[in-house]
Every structure is written in structure tokens, then in C-alpha cells.
Length: 198
Image (tube, rainbow, N blue to C red; front, side):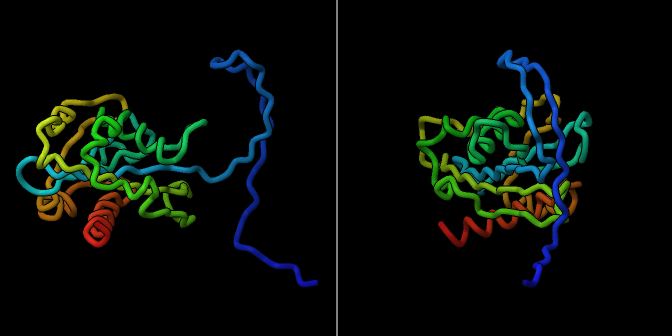
């Protein structure tokens, strides 16, 4: 019988034990060190007046990597949450925008499915990244105000939160800003997905 070969390296394995601060339980666990799941949130909004806008952040200088670079809200999936729930949380933690508050203005979130999955091993830290798109229409609504106030938000992870119009993105921001994780290309792909699928 022929032995099949694969382009892989086995995951390392560790055993560890500790007393959980959250549950008070003694944890004894085998852990396989494998690729991490990351999530990225592309949030597009149609404002009351003007062009489609995208939500971006600037990473703080306290981040482990890609310090001070611009990106989309992103992060790792935690225990006991789906990947989509992780995206909602990361957008909130990094921008203070809580997407469920605007569910009545939702045009699409692609049925909570990613518009792209990136699993190329050459990606940053070999992460498997799930890209989600959420689009909201503030144009014809009197109930909710365009959430411009989130631009005042910052924390340990986020130095700056900013809404930028799509024309400004292509004209000023795409090539001139220092982008983390090639997120300028992610924005372009998300806009193309929206234009071709909505």
C-alpha cells in the first residue's frame, strides 16, 4: 500500500495544569498547539447624506504587533462563542459600536456567513481568518443617528476609530496609510462583494 504524503507539520503538544481564576476548578488539559482562528469585521454604513463609509481603526502602540498601523476591527475567537459572535465582540471592543443595536437598519450581513476565509499558511502567524461584512442604511431612518461619536473612542488596543467614505478610501487612504494585515485589500474585496451581491 502506497503511503500518502501531505504538506503538513504535526502540531506540538503540551500538557498543563492550573487553578482556573474564572471557575475555581483545577484544570488539567492536553493542548495541541495549532493554528488560531481570527475574525475580521468589515462594517459599511450608508449615512444620511453622502457616500458609503467604512469603519477603520488605528492600532495602539501597546499592541504586540503591527503597532500604530491602520486596520479593520479584528481579533481572535474566544471560548464559548461562534466566529460571528467573535466578530460582533471585536467590533465592539475596538470601536464601541455594538452592531445588534442597529439590526433594524441592517441591509445585509450575508446571513452571518463569512464573505471570505483566508487559510493560506503564509498569512500572519498562520491564522485562519474569517472575514465578515455587515452593511447598514442610515439614509432613510429617523430613529438612529449616524454613530459618529464612536470616533472619540480609544482604549489599550485602539488609538483611533474613524469612518471614512469609500471615495476617500480609494483617493487618500488605500495607498497612503500604513495598513496592518493587508486590510486595505480586504476593504476592496468587501466593497466588490457588496456591489455584486446586493
